[in-house]
Image (cartoon, rainbow, N blue to C red):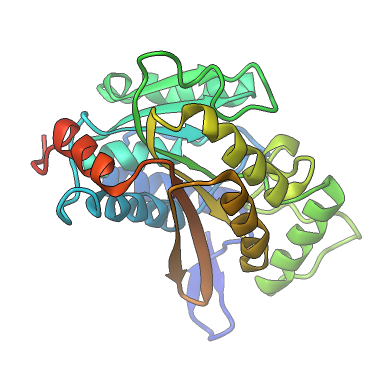
Length: 288
């Protein structure tokens, strides 16, 4: 499904949900060997290149503690907080680096769809495990148990503080795509998303702040905690939370695609020597 863009060229119609689903399916198959992928209507349909950038930023972050070598294979384990129906982060992490992934979510419909993707793609269950998060206020409780050691966590947090804010954001995206809202109805956009995917109390800052504070209890069981941050203006507040919590180190990883810039906030409770020893004991630089 294509349309003429502002330059008079034929382009994917990014305001059409079905167009983006088909594009995602093709990209996942071509680059990551995913033979069957779909999501339910109205669930978040993320752009694959942006999600892949985040996973590659994680790989570069881990390489800092591994003599600048990206680690490969199932010895690297990550947790996707809020994996969603689309399962994209684990699919990219496994397809590109062969890592082992946990995916958590509070939504049983999302988990059921993610599980159907695993069932339709032989071999993925060996590397990806799905877990139901029963506490909607928690990111790590119930996911990081005794004897669980994670090399990283990642998260695409709810950006908005309310559904009204989410609707306004969708309207801005609609206009940026050069499409007019018709009939006064909220635009039915490719990015979609259920309420829990789009908003939470306190919005993005509230969600990530709670995640930073919760990570204190798991400081020895995870090398790097990370989260996507949609707005650069939120970073000063989050820096204050990190300082208040007393993390050992934090980094802000910048990702750029076209005219869009996004960022990942990463923090760790472990000192550099501990991280280097961790990496040497667990990882390999060889593809498996």
